[in-house]
Image 1 (tube, helix red, strand yellow):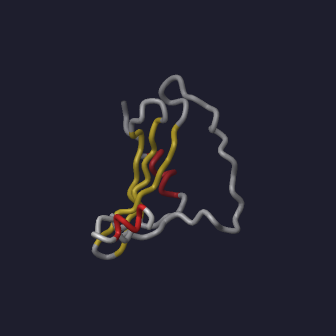
Image 2: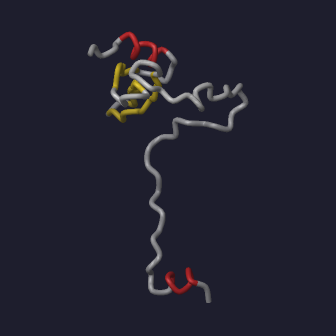
Length: 101
């Protein structure tokens, strides 16, 4: 009898929770994957490198997508935009909708 069998018998194993929400990342696709151009780059001051991320917000009638532009050095949000789809326009609008200061 193994360790996991001993834990399972009295019901002491932790079961995995079912994941909720939608899947927005599909890494195994047929399209070109571009290399990480900033893998070795370490920003030494603000505004040397901005990165973008998108998260979805569940609404009563579908989803909205929040694009956040973050300064990689200070980790401050420097721009954002709430978009109705996952197009590349969201991050571009986030840059234009930058936060002053």
